[in-house]
Length: 520
Image (tube, rainbow, N blue to C red; front, side):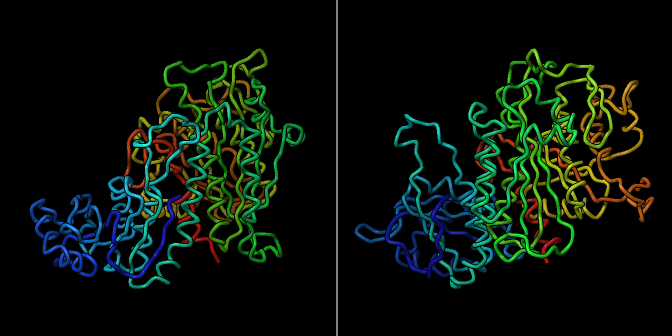
């Protein structure tokens, strides 16, 4: 991650200077005004010639603005913040992300943030940090001119202590996002269930308690659905159980006295998905290395919560398998018995993620009795048909939880769109020989029937006091949400705070939701 520092305002003697400018700010002030005076008014003239108004998304680069022999920045990058009256953390972050590519060839950049509140200066830094992510672990012959040179960003602010305080939790969240992006970016010959589980153990350094379940434990628990997916691969499955006790613990994440039920997050961790016997087409199959993006988001989220010492009790579970065709692979037509006792007729072995999640969700409820449960998965291509790459699909049995996730998405540029659930869709997964089948009757509504499948493994164990509310069915009501992130886990183009590649979608979204609603 970039070295981010907050310093007192002073004109830089070299490197790049970034000027965040609001659309209706009334002219240059602070460091920008000082620089313009030192440059003999050249800054104002250049911005006027470029018709730079400070509109959101607008930018302008000015080269060598200082007179000959005068010390100063080698370039100035002005970025628009939009209207000052509508300035938000999201706008500041987007502007920071937009500025980063234009200064990465310099060793150091200074941001004239002296006209911004400290929390917005920190948000600007967040945008630069997130956009500066780069996965280059396997590059061995990269030319020097292709390597980014930027090492340090200094944000000049009138309130250094306040800006540092605002940045500290943001940095922890950014590190969680980077961890998720790293996991998704890894090639599948490196990241398999065992090595992914090893990465989870690294969170113990942050105070997260990590437990790994293997095939023997899964068999004892009766996880026939997850073991069925895994049986075609030589790489054995794992389940990572990560616990952070920020509310009931002693400040380092270790459990002291329980303060109530934890909030639970569950991730699909299919480290490579060939489709199994129902094999996928060869074209684009290499992308199936990121079929574990939901699990990566959960791991990154747990790192973020621990890194910022969140005052919440949270548990993260990731089911990690490899879906491969072999002489021992699961067949279409097989019937498996899940941990819940329910049976599933496997019609399509490429609908494997829901089988993994079913057993992990049952285990989570049986062991932790969570206050709420959210799962994330690159579950269906159908959600991309429905929503493109702009929104994750949100399915929920609870209106309040759905509203919380939607609001958190709007505040983090990780947008979600609520999709329907209902009996008409549920009927499509009825089986003639088992309790259910793992796919619906056709391509129509594929993301919805997948969510209906998952909902069959939510709740139970008591009478629902809210029967009829939010679709109560007589079972104990557990607020649950499913996020289908198949369209948002990876981007083929640069976004304001996300470079091309793995996005880490879900880490910031759920961290924001926890901070707003579940921290004591």
